[in-house]
Amino acid sequence: MKSTQPEINQRYMLLFKIDAKNLYNRISNRQNEYIEIFSLKRSRSVFKDIFENRYAKASAFDLSHCPAEVMEALDQFYTRADELYWYLKYTQDMPNTIEDEVSRKVARLGKLYEQLCLYVDAELSGVELDQDPDFKDIPSDDIHYDSFVTEGEKDEEQAESDFIQPEHFPDPDELSNEDDKPDFE
Image (tube, rainbow, N blue to C red; front, side, top):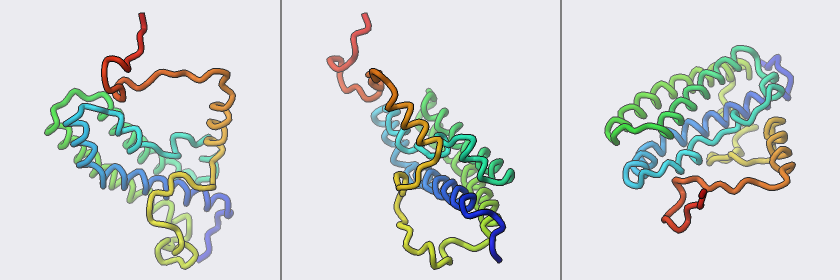
């Protein structure tokens, strides 16, 4: 069955689905690694790379290409991912508690990801992407930076280039010793 959605809408839904897949895979597949890094080094800088996603940069224009059910599923998935990021960024829990809490949240995130895929696949006519011959050449690794850029990403890039003087405030977690810390006195 052919999708009733215009091609541009199909592309946006596919883009968000791929972004959600990449985010979910990074969160779940690297779970032991980032918990171990946090437990040993108490550095939270690794979470920035794990939780980076396109949805956070998407504009209302980008989302307007998705049906209401897909937007709702996207919102539920990315809200849960953001809650997990917030928890990891600011928790004071002990490592075992963190591991248990992350496992619980990742399991819930997995169910929301499956739900999102069902909605997107239904809108894209129910054809599984891995069975569609047009999509066999898509690389399986993280395609976080490809040639398709959402309007929100364009706006963000333009805003970044409009700064007269960029701010230079290092992440305190990334400072290695006292000599590198900025002097605020």
